[in-house]
Length: 236
Image (cartoon, rainbow, N blue to C red; front, side, top):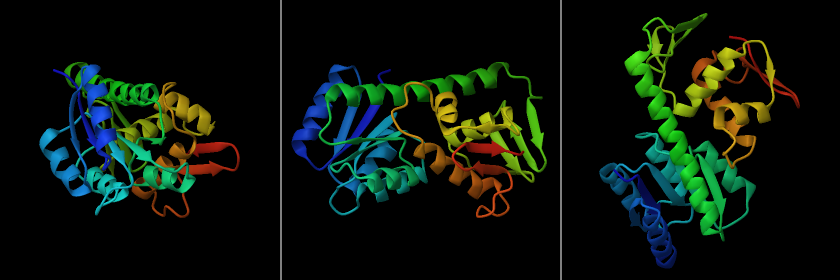
């Protein structure tokens, strides 16, 4: 079964180019030119990865990304016409997994798509292996926080938390290194992998999301502590 890619861009020539080249690589591809159509197509097509331009008529890429994140965890590669840090940071904040500045080389885009799909495959394999072979007692308890590694679930005071896959991976890595100061580079290497193209701001964004879900007061964190210039320390 070929992996599926959804392309969302209002430039017809770019859509055609991406669709042609992605199909040559063996992917099943659909493309749309508007944000509202992107939501409908994502629900119908159920893509394995989404290539999403920021500048779209009507509903822009940020809004589309935010809406998609409420319904699915599909990796999103955002395209921006400006090499603007704000675009990249906002893209990460609304749930994008990676970003690429126009103009870009097709080789780089293909590499990023492959990297995103590879991470999805690894997560699915981990979940499948856990379902088949993981003993039900792989439970980790840290105060009122419980990680069920077999189910890849996190419970806070008995209630299941809705975590994105990377949020779960990050929390799991923190739990493996309680009390240790971990640099952003170390976290990127271990949680995102060597093939990740982003930068350390990705870690900051995901830490903020985690704090909003597991900290009593995210503005005064007591579980995930920031070490100025050093990284983060998880206190459990």
